[in-house]
Image (cartoon, rainbow, N blue to C red; front, side):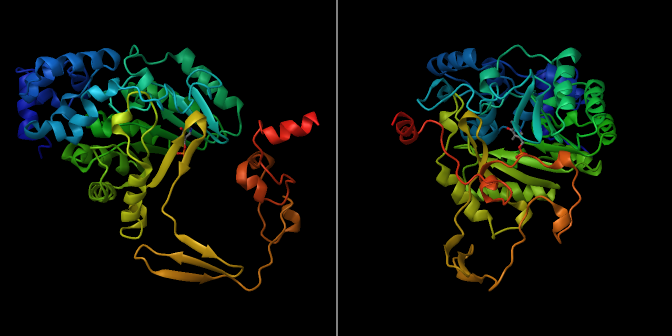
Amino acid sequence: MTIYNQKQQDLASHIHPDVAMSKWKDWKWQLKQSIKTISSVEEILGITFDEKERKILDQTMEKFPLSITPYYLSLVDPENYKEDPIFKQSFPSPGELLVHRDDMKDPLAEDMDSPTDLVTHRYPDRVLLQISNVCSMYCRHCTRKRRVGDVDFIPGKEAIRKGIDYIRQNEMIRDVLLSGGDPFLLDDSYLDWILTELRAIPHVEVIRIGTRTPVVLPYRITDSLVEMLKKHHPVWINTHFNHPREITSSSKEAVRKLADAGIPLGNQSVLLAGVNDCPRIMKSLVHKLVKNRIRPYYLYQCDLSEGLSHFRTPVGKGIEIMESLLGHTSGFSVPTYVIDAPHGGGKIPVMPNYLISWSTNKVVLRNYEGVITTYKEPDSYEPIFCDRNCDDCRLQLDLNESEEAKSVGIARLLNDYDQTDALTPEDLDRLERRNHE
Ligand SMILES: *Cc1c(COP(=O)(O)O)cnc(C)c1O
């Protein structure tokens, strides 16, 4: 079975007449041959930019460089490149030079929530460990755009060991997310070392890897990589498909290998104006994903990073997409739509409203068809008071002390064992006045 098409063959022989297809599926060859100049793109796609366009593109590239794998470029339709979703995700746009008044360099405050190099510790029980500063394709919509164009590097063992030490010393961390850059640009043996070190920590229950290689460099998913990953289960992988056109025979082959190795696969899409801001495109994407055993996980509202304003949609577009999916298709095909809040607030799910009203014993709901319906609540319900002492409770639970995290947020207001009855902003004028009276 050949898993490349005529266009890829043409492209391969164009890039390197003597090697052609024999090397096409070699991921290191793909990396070495990555396209990094406007002229190469012009030459390969058979297109030309006029002098004015060229000047702006050059300016854009000075700020945010370009890098596309031959494979990913081969998916662009040269006849209609300006509207092409693959092209828009990988080729610079003058829009990237516009700094909108709401833009921020590090909107998610990842650098601020970093207790030690390479680690972002935002949520109580899980951390982000950035083990790579290299990507095979520079997504134009990268949320870490501030780092695109930094010198490509893979942190040394010393640096990574420090991150791992932090995880070892913090027993509440049960889930480690390897991210970057792209963790799969590390060699198998280096990745194997990191996974082995993490696995040796008793409280690390799950390891997750975030990678876009199945989309932009599917040949990275080699049999030997998969054999190595299997040794470290449970390993979960999240990838990043944004458009149904990215699901090709090569990417299908890559995710098949991962799924066959028992790795649960998730997908994180970013809602991008002019790329996938359409309910029909999104439905087609999620259907193709589940057919390939990938569970749509998150749909992200585009971040407020500098240079992304041309990609942003109103939140209403995301709600409209969710409305078109929920109820209309399989529950496991529907991602959670999230806004990653500025200043490190984390991911906040947003949904259409289904709860219309509520009385003391009845809720009024609407379904996806527009039917307005009711759910009758029980006439009597005796809640069990929770003092965190399961000995006095009939719903027996055997937790050890370390599994009991501190209660935070609304969950803290709701529980019985904490006396907190309000969450109050720190700098309220009203409270200031009280102090001075
Ligand atoms: C997204 C993210 C996580 C993981 O969040 P989940 O909702 O568990 O997928 C963890 N840490 C940081 C900093 C993140 O941005």
